[in-house]
Length: 191
Image (cartoon, rainbow, N blue to C red):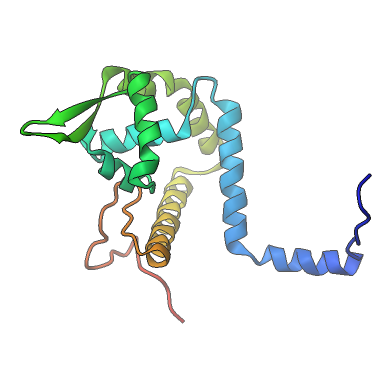
């Protein structure tokens, strides 16, 4: 039997709702969760978000290869935390490990044709469907604005992660922030 618990009054629920409506970051978390659920429902193929993110980082930011520590920094994971993912990607044939010439202790991760096929062929139908869904509800300008704003939020989260943990995260292969801020990507707003 469930222990009895005090239930909130209608007034308490109303106050809680008013408070929660003003919590912007909570809205972003909910938004992110809905997108993840949508992708899990729509994607018909063997979609693995972390696998896709790793392969995209290796291709987009590493030119087809990168060291495990670079991949960890791009995915906001610890070097130790990336090992299991790398093992799985090697096992399924998406990447290979290569030793550096002259230094067998250093490892480079290189995307394979199977890894590219995963991104470009296997996921193509699902990605086209999700892109079409966005286009049904948003104009091209709105999509671009959303992506710019998402990038700003990501950079803010990465900066705060660095501030709170003392680590320098790159996140998404963006590398260090340029000295001067551009109009499209200002720093934190004050006042």
